[in-house]
Amino acid sequence: MIAAYLAGVPVRIYTQRGLRLETCSGWRLWLLTMTERLAGFCADRVLFVSPSLRATCLERKLVREAKALVIGSGSSNGVNAERIIARRNSADVRDIAARYGIAPGAPVVGFVGRLTRDKGVRELAAAFTLIRHGHPGVKLLVVGYFEDGDPVDAETISALKSDPDVVITGFVKDASAYYHVMSVLAFPSHREGFPNVPLEAACAGLPTVGFSATGVVDAIQHGVTGTIVPLGDVAALANAITGYLTDPALRRRHGTAAKERALRDFPSARIWNGLLDLYRERLQAHGIAWDRTVGRLPTAHVHELPSSKAA
Image 1 (cartoon, rainbow, N blue to C red):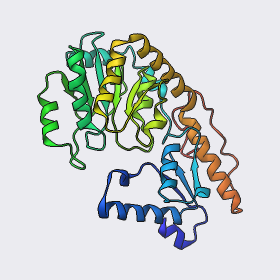
Image 2 (image 1 turned 120 degrees about the vertical axis):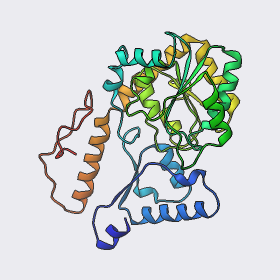
Image 3 (image 1 turned 180 degrees about the vertical axis):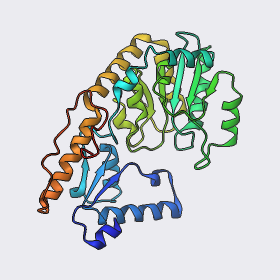
Image 4 (image 1 turned 60 degrees about the horizontal axis):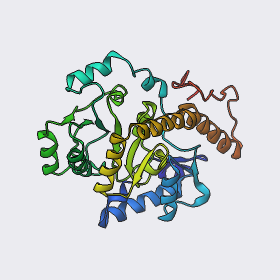
């Protein structure tokens, strides 16, 4: 952004995908605040991946409101719904269940993501302890791996790894089949831009329980597609997850609504078309010629760009 600003590049679009500073303090908070303000100042427009992220940045005075944009309902790239839906009855789902000793219809709390402090892994472990007291036989399926950056405390790691009812898969290239083994998704992240995991889970018909964190509140419609609980409240997290495990009708209702919303509001082509419109508008505002052969993409059942030119 600095180089483009100094070089006089007329259209400078900074895409903001999440604020690391939300969980920082001291000099790190100051440094990250200054760099965000500098990037926002140098940008022609700042594109946010969620309404709540935009609101947080405006509240912190990181960017001017006139520059701040969100495409549609948000998200970084929409969701490839067909890829996940197609795995529902696949052999991969049966193989995963057999590999980890998960019986058909068994209650499974799922988590997908990096295993870090910011993702709420400590709270997830504590909540699972509470869930298990009232729901014997439940499994915790953790799809992800422990990272060295922003590490989870050693006590939590040890508790998860030694628990026979906890499955930690390690790195998984494609988690789409794993969602179909789960009963409900737990998403206790402390900060996001717009998380993809709740959208992917929604395509598998799962409700999500998450904290009231930036980005998460855009991915989950409280009381419709899942449940939002206060940030850091382990007991509320456990209670909400237990509610879905003990009430299949509620789980199906919210899971169905989540899937409908994902298909309706978050097709990838909606984001691509929004980017296309933004680039056109900004170029035309500066009197720059635009290749008019590049057209909009259909918003239904489109998950891959047809050519590099369309990108």
